[in-house]
Length: 103
Image (tube, rainbow, N blue to C red; front, side, top):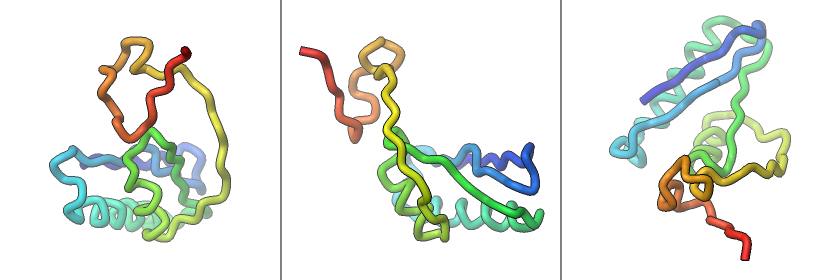
């Protein structure tokens, strides 16, 4: 797994990157890793510890963050070119995200 804390705006700390390789999802490693992120962040006594997530993240990301104590505070709709349609990613990448093509 990977986690990166961004403290460039300290006393705020952002969980900038968080992820697991596919073989480790659904096995409790994410719960452990988010616990480590929280422990490391709060060892620095931040005024705020936060994370951004989106629908391109794993479907279990938001529920994990909420179970770990994060509170959703905003939702936005952002429209961007789908990298599967531009050829940047294979068409079968991120199967949990609908592929919408213009007719």
